[in-house]
Length: 99
Image 1 (cartoon, rainbow, N blue to C red):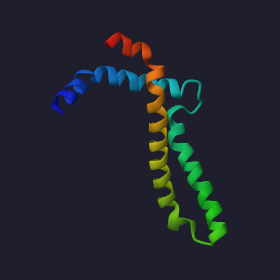
Image 2 (spheres, one colour; image 1 turned 135 degrees about the horizontal axis):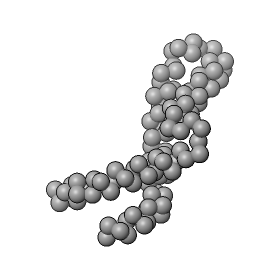
Image 3 (cartoon, helix red, strand yellow; image 1 turned 30 degrees about the horizontal axis):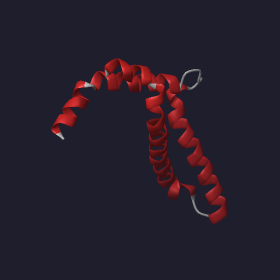
Image 4 (tube, rainbow, N blue to C red; image 1 turned 120 degrees about the horizontal axis):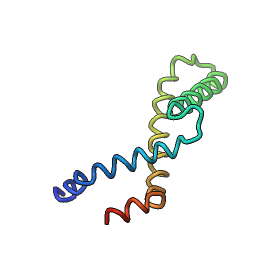
């Protein structure tokens, strides 16, 4: 385990540059850039809150924090799963340089 952590520590610059490259690629050409990561879950939370408040007749302020926090976690898990599957294909040239 310590050897594995040591390898990660030695590769920290590669990991940093891969993460930076991924963020740049993800938001290239986007008008809002990284702000889109905040606005998308916020918009979805507001839309869900409006729909659920009309369906269940509850106050929006009662459950908006729960919806927003759940959507933030869901977006993180979802983007991590999708991005984790694609990172090796998109970063194959960087990986080949280090091996």
